[in-house]
Image (cartoon, rainbow, N blue to C red; front, side, top):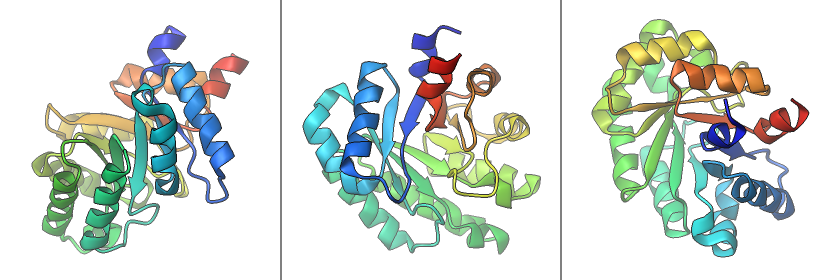
Length: 216
């Protein structure tokens, strides 16, 4: 695959808790210079990034991150604030406790509420596959589809494991045709990035995407 084409699918990511503005600014500049899909950054830096880079940069940020057990009201507020400050895309984390208790209706309702708060911006739903059974993953595909989200996303990158090809195949069988797939978590090599794209993923979340191609 051509590097330019691959980069257009990468959310260039920096979500480490110790990240400073200088760190985030570098990620944003790299995303712009290399034509990446977005820079995925902590909410704290959304306003500064959008003010500096404007429409040259698609700014992605996270909501309910990384554990997902905030209340729906808090996630909605986080989303509204992020959009107000310039976020173009929101990656939200579901409440896994609701999944484990079988309360999929609550998961759907929460995703729908956050999608409404996006005010037309892209919503990606992180389901954190490493904690789930295949049956739960399939049910969450239905939740994401019914709630009108734009993407289903494998992982936060903070769990014990990340994206695996088997989960992408499962998603493809159960999501609605209009829902796209984002693979994230532990994707560090050119081979892994291109493998997930070849499987049909529309986005790759990676902090090492640029490095993988510089070293290739």
